[in-house]
Image (cartoon, rainbow, N blue to C red; front, side, top):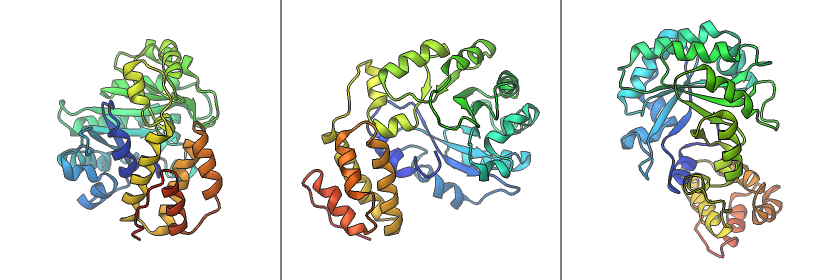
Length: 312
């Protein structure tokens, strides 16, 4: 989730507990090896042993189709401390797809095979190589071929978002198609797409035939969702739990991002939160037109009656 699940949200969400591992935002690989600073920018956790502050392993995510560069950059990421390598074949962005990265490669199973093979061959067998794909680009005609190509190339795990690129993020997620993939491959399948509650989790795993899921927007909306799934207990995260997270998020990003970007990032998260939390809807109405960082900070502080200094 480029531009959303960055290091700041990774820190806050994993601090709630019960994530096995998380991925970085993707490193867009072209025809050259990247210096260390590129990896440290997108995945600062590499500077602390490849883990978030709460100890959750972070896997660097690569996106691209240049075989030699994918292999070299995978080696570099692992040498810097990445918990394996994740390869992105699911990004639906038109800009990314025009550069022959992400979901557009789902039109070419042979290319998927070559990319995964290059990365797998460049790394020790002990290093996990995973890949993420969608059900297809325009349709599901190549779905099983794509999954088979990724498996045959040596991937250890496959995550599948239960929509095609054409379907984007429009509901519903087609979990039943994941069941077809599960029956077709032998490597672990990780289900993804519209898992926003305990009920969603159980319906997804029943259809997909796997207990392993990757949480994306569901965790953004419900920060304790991983805990709920582990405990098999359906509860709604209280606003008294979420509001301090928003405050902490604001404090953290205000130290490293320009004021305009801070305002945008907070609005982005509140926009997701308001889908489940009435208090977030109220907050959203007060901040959606706000552009001034100091005013927005004051509105955030008012949600818990706490005052934090604004530090641009």
